[in-house]
Image 1 (cartoon, rainbow, N blue to C red):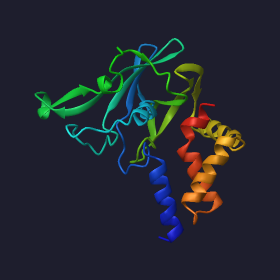
Image 2: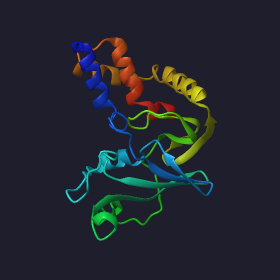
Image 3: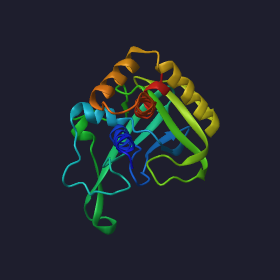
Amino acid sequence: MTRLCTLFALLLALALPATAFATAQVPDRIRIDGEDHALHTNPLARKLASVGWERPEEALLNSANWRGYIAFWEIAGDRLLLLDATMIVPGHGPQGQAKKSILPDIFPSATPPLLAEWYSGALIVPQGAVVEYVHMGYESVYERYLVFRIAEGKVLERLSLSPEELSRYRDAKFDAFTGTEEFRHGVEALRERWKDASEAQLLQVMKQMHAERYMGL
């Protein structure tokens, strides 16, 4: 592998903590119209980063869940609500394990459900059967997708898209994002950190790293 290819792989690995794992990841769960679905977005990650949460030593590590927790959500009217987030710890349940909520550590004075007012972006909810399995992150392709645009915990738009429509939607949103100051500053920061990367490589990293953000705009 060339130096630039190695660099680009490193860029993607660092830029994509939610999708760059070499193992398919267990998703969060979300209730929509009374039905439970997988959620191929992790809206709690931003909040955990802001409060400095780290997976405690008692949490049991699983290669299918590197983030260390599973969060449970609901779309209620036009609101994104956090119901709970649990990690696996030693206990008296099956296989000597038990679930423990991490919410008291993050929201010590609040009682769920909680409006996800810290989150603005796009929620990706796969629908139907897997049409192409990819053993990495949330990269498998499904028959259809629900996409929710969220601003400070409020639903702005709900879309039902085929994989092809989702790809075109993402491309259009990214094209619009490239004209923003946020994009320019992001590219400059990457260029400063990884001077050997080409402009095309930096562009691809930006497209992957900020997908949640620009798809929600």
